[in-house]
Image (cartoon, rainbow, N blue to C red):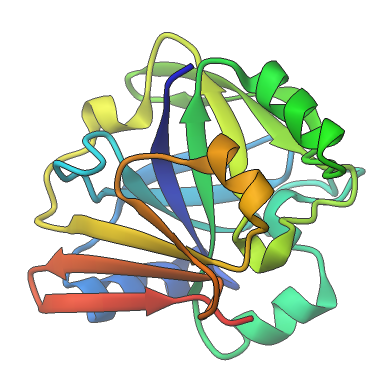
Length: 219
């Protein structure tokens, strides 16, 4: 079944910090995103579409200070003390998301391989263009796994965020992923993603209005 790199997750303590980081690092102002009622987070988005990943985008995400406690662990380790420590040094790339059309089957194959990628959970958020709906693999503890190298899986409904994102002049040349066991690579493979044995868990190589930029996740 088909799969593609859907988006990169860049976490920040606040969206304001994330926007300032994006402008200073990539030379673009991210577009409006929205609020995730399920997780009490909110985001801003920017296109990173390229021939290697035609519908890919970058997501800047932060805990929504105006939202109630979600009553569960937030996705992408956003509640973990270690993540709070990392983000005290500034926004950073922490994870990637793989788009697929067989999310239950992929989660089941990972379970057979001894990896709990999480339950398939329905989520949605409202946008000026209408409702976005998707299903996503989220663990009860919110963990990313393998320092963020194992992607979260997502299956979109009728609409996709990239449908309305402007071309910001940022292109993803490739995403390098390190540290995954070879047995897990087939279910994570996608155009524009290169798997290596050793390095930082994630490194995104981009062309931007400010020139070439490499975003590295810390281990």
